[in-house]
Length: 67
Image 1 (cartoon, helix red, strand yellow):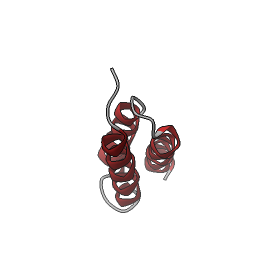
Image 2 (image 1 turned 90 degrees about the vertical axis):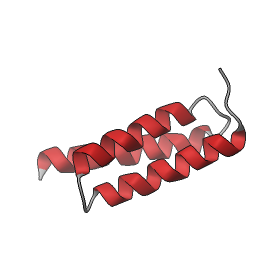
Image 3 (image 1 turned 135 degrees about the vertical axis):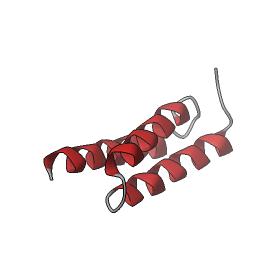
């Protein structure tokens, strides 16, 4: 299944924004949402942007469980 480039770009940016918000509010839920959006976005051509969303989501989860 392939999704459009624009949709993949939106998913990546929304995942990154949600991940950044997760550092300040509800880190577990926001981290999970950022990772899920990044994984869904990997089905587009915007691989780098969505990998960044996954990494930010994982960093938020690590932050939540370590601090």
